[in-house]
Image 1 (cartoon, rainbow, N blue to C red):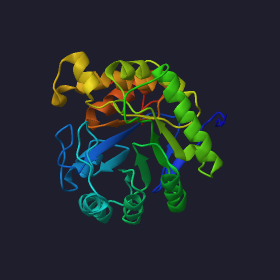
Image 2: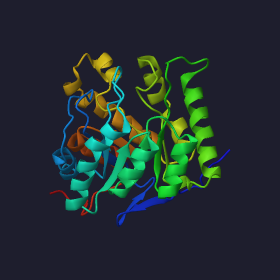
Image 3: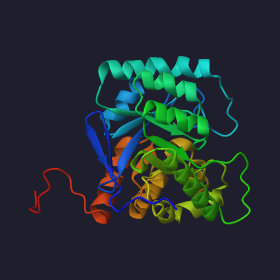
Length: 284
């Protein structure tokens, strides 16, 4: 089985280095789809700059809703929503790392030409997407997903095996391990009990040896557990973020960046030994 060496390397993009294992990075969600499940869709780049200014380490821009029951859109519509936002970001900000949430090869090619740095695919990494990533020479977030939430064995066993198989194939084709970020796909092709089981076993995803990402922000399982509406799930999300840090997850994808930064700062200090710049043992 493909495994990374201890010290899983780092990702160097736009003059910055994301050192895997040093701390947990916060990915700020930027929805430019009008039918986003969280109700935060915007047709301009203002949300992107707000997420950046709140402390996001990287941004994830998506132009097609992936909520349950969403209406699929064609490449042209996705690009019409996506490209103006990317172009505005890049016109004003050359340093922020930007991923694009799409599973369409041509959409990502155009997005990459407009300044996108990372491909984030909710449908794993088929041959066409892998070729696109290699052609564009970009890192990839590859998520586990299923059309129907049916599992013949333990959901955790199946997700781990699926991601491991994906990783082996991608690395064999030439994708460097430190550039392959695995996402177990909380809320995608999974029932609430499946999601809870995976969150209880994140260490098994991390143990595959690749960088990892978890996206739980405002998800319906959190609503089901807390009884809270989508706009009031910050604390429920925070619990999952702290557990993700404890399991060794490298990136958390969130709507509420400022809250997430506080969560990962404290959790990283406890779990990874991270300290903020200027840390002193003396009392203020």
